[in-house]
Length: 210
Image 1 (cartoon, rainbow, N blue to C red):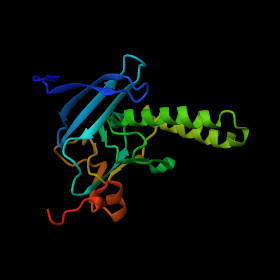
Image 2 (cartoon, one colour; image 1 turned 90 degrees about the horizontal axis):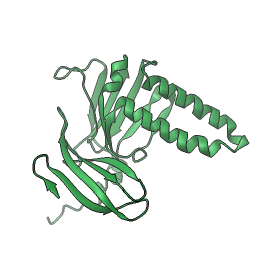
Image 3 (cartoon, rainbow, N blue to C red; image 1 turned 90 degrees about the vertical axis):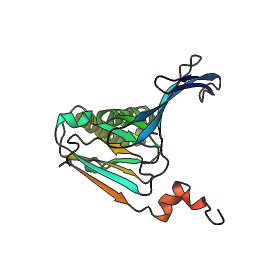
Image 4 (cartoon, one colour; image 1 turned 45 degrees about the vertical axis):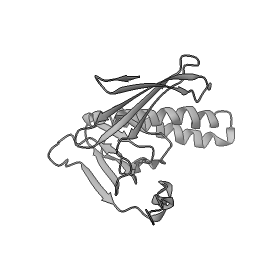
């Protein structure tokens, strides 16, 4: 079903949790000063599974993109953030690094992506170490990391850097000073290496005789 008023598309897909058919809504959205994305949300009425993913509406860019944002005030947590499934997320001051694919594609805020990272750490890491006495030190390290992430999320820790690196070029951090340059954010466009092209499947594309 297509809603002609707002380009909302609704279709049935198989639930990845219970494998029954459920509804998925898909809607193209334009991000100011960036590009269009496709937001896909799935809700299963049978098992309660919910997911919301973001896909690029324009394919892989010619170059990768890397954002480095210095957190200087609580309002930075409200900046919009688009993370494609190909992007990595890093806070170097905490030795915190999230590989591409770990958090999936998301359109959220700086606060939202940190909250999501905390939830994954709590649900996976701490539960893994809970009943393992030999891993208690690791659990304590993870707990300390989570507390620091929460402090950043709540606007109580500054002078740390958020690094969003996307070889596909389809991620974005909002410039709060647009259309002027953001004094606290650096944006770098770069040529992908062979390994990054391989991860994106670009090395398998044949262009000869076409």
